[in-house]
Amino acid sequence: MPTTKNTSCRPASAAPFQPLLRAAGALGVLLIGAGLLTHSAQTAEGIRDGLASCATLVIPSLLPFLIFSGMLSTTRLGEWVSRPLEPVCRWVFHLPPEAGSALLMSMIGGYPVGARTIAQLLEQGRIQPRTARRMLCFCINAGPAFVVSTVGAALYSSVQAGLCLLAAHLGASAIVGFFICTGKETFEPAPPAEPLPLGTAFVQSVSSAAQSLIGICAFVVTFSGLRSLLWETGLLPRLVTALERLWPVSGGSAFYTALLRGLLEVTDGCIAASALGGEQAFVLTAFLLSFGGVSVICQAAAAFHRLPMSFGLLFFSRFAGACIAAALASLLYQRCLADLLAGMQYTQPVAQATVAGIIGGLSLIGMGSILLLSMAMNGISTKNRFSTGKTVGEMI
Image 1 (cartoon, rainbow, N blue to C red):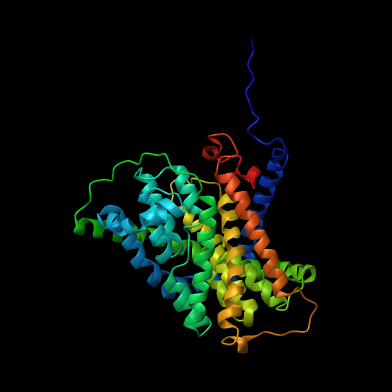
Image 2 (image 1 turned 90 degrees about the vertical axis):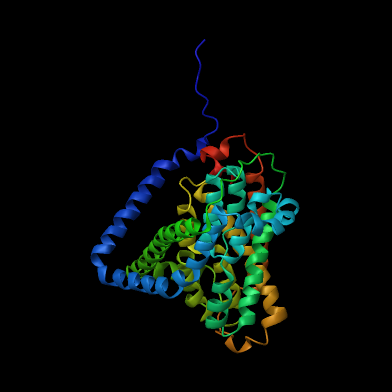
């Protein structure tokens, strides 16, 4: 009796669009190549800005934590540090105790440090791919040094504003993690490797941190140059104009410029968002900090030899957390910062969507996104669908 190959796991509706998407991607690469030839000077200026950002911000803030995360994974220090977090991992996020070190580093280390720690635990066999997928949805966070010192103190001239942004950011991540991480783990982790001597662990951690920093800085510089290229070719200005006509807001073109810049690279977007002033600036900054930008998503993916989830689901989880962070930031602004930052209020007489309406919409979008994420991450499909990476887009 002849047998036929079962192709039901691949959505039939997606097949006709795959050639179109590939063609669009190839066309985009060709257009970027042409833009590099015609706007090389402007692209080079953006690259120099990215290099300056790496030298003044990225390397000083990330290098110590990258070294520290390496020490956690190769010595008994990780076991000691993560032990107090075992109740949080077990009862709040339903994660194995081994995940405590990654949870800690995601809260204090900066965007790629949490992902890097998750990757190290996965390579050592101490967590399973399903756990890594869940943790990536909420363990890629900005570090307190960046949020409080750089964004709060430097951009808003207020440490209190930085603390409120950090609270909104980590609160949104905790909400996403709480809803995503349902069901207890049944995986038996591999025993931890024999700890290295302290001197050897330090040398290896510094070497590994340097390699990671090269990749991180490469993404920062790349997206800084890409932003300059897209702006000089007129693509971003046209998109800003179209968005402004479709959905007018008080900040006008400045708001959408900051939004698009932040969707590419978070530091650049936060600088532009802070110039808007008032609650709008604060809420947009919180959104961008939690989303992180495409640059941060690529940095997190680069920590893995093979990303245990699709880019689409990772992008979607970042967006869900960003919407919730924006809603929390609006509440914190009204309660704690309205008088302090009132002098930064931006005004412009224009027909506009109200901040309350925007935040309400973001709240609904964020909670709806969490619902879809929870359904996707907790077994609506067959057992191995996540391992193939072929049907995540169908779920979201």
